[in-house]
Image 1 (cartoon, rainbow, N blue to C red):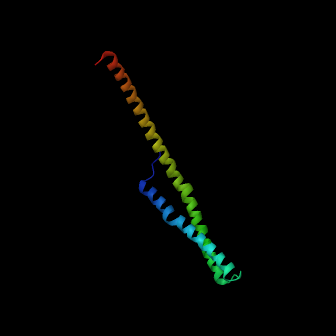
Image 2: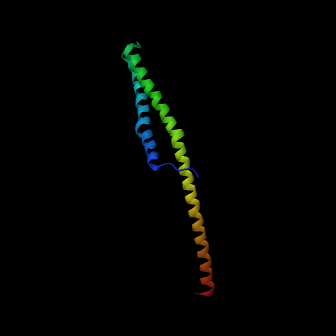
Image 3: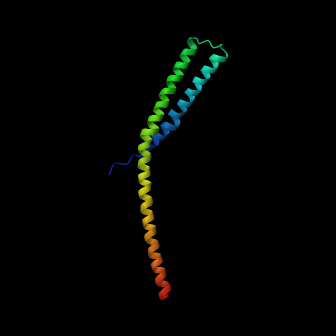
Length: 118
């Protein structure tokens, strides 16, 4: 059986996605939209050096954070999710089997009690 992931590393991956990559992507996306709106409204559709630098920095950060978000969410956390599903499935199937065994014992003992009046 494969080694199960360390719960602390799983938590760190989740925190990395939730606290760094997704907000970074969304903030950079807002920066790109803000720059485009600013250029087309206040600067009369004239792109100057500041506009190019701002759109370049915000756009590159948006691409980097978006790529990291997808990599961590799909690949790394995907492995952790699959492992978690396997663990839950085995635990649930084990619990269902034990409940079925207990139910069979209770039915048999209830039948014996009813027939023989113990």
